[in-house]
Length: 293
Image 1 (tube, helix red, strand yellow):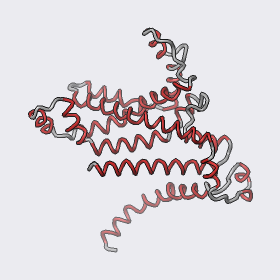
Image 2 (spheres, rainbow, N blue to C red; image 1 turned 180 degrees about the vertical axis):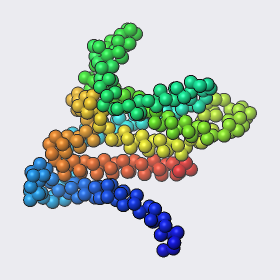
Image 3 (spheres, one colour; image 1 turned 90 degrees about the horizontal axis):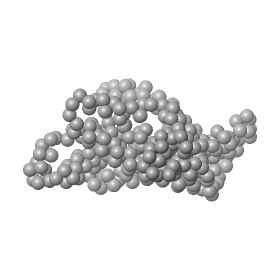
Image 4 (cartoon, rainbow, N blue to C red; image 1 turned 180 degrees about the horizontal axis):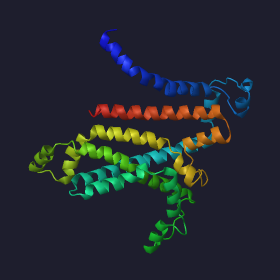
């Protein structure tokens, strides 16, 4: 090892050590835990701990509530992620094309939900979505539309949570996409305009290809975050009504901290990790095929 390599390892060593201690070691221990029947009895006396191998994973795949939670999570991701990215891109393009001192004000206002406390704003949204007293139903009543039981109707509970989550998180992606838009040379738009391209054609053939790496990053980050749906149903619906908002992470929380089946809950966590890893790998491969990554 030459002198430069040694210097590099010396600088990276402390960070790698902390990463190993606080990430890789806990992950490895959690995987070992998923192969045991660790529960409240084992927590009190480790002599009650038994190694069960893949039994937790087999039991998980036979649990109807897990498949229900997985379906709810996919519904949340498949609807929420494209909606969040589309809204983020639209807001970024509006801010990028705006002129004047108010641009900073709008940028701050649109980003503000990201830095607000999720539990606090979730409680506020519960009142906004209230069937009788909520402002949203009040507005619908003004339009002649009957009130909607947003959080009490299984058909509307998950769309209501998606609406809240998109509002809460789209500002983060907006900032990333806004930075990407500001790096696109104006000459490309001018050349396309001279060639006769209209606004939609410039968006399709100039903006989207130039934002390809940014959109890949945003889609992966958003998908990873949305697969970890927990706080919204925990605060707003407690997984109801009739389990229509139970997510995989909420299911894992109940198994681990309500029923104290910690080994089983660890298995849920690793199954979710495998699903997220597989989907991210597919996204990256598709991006590579298109020359984006």
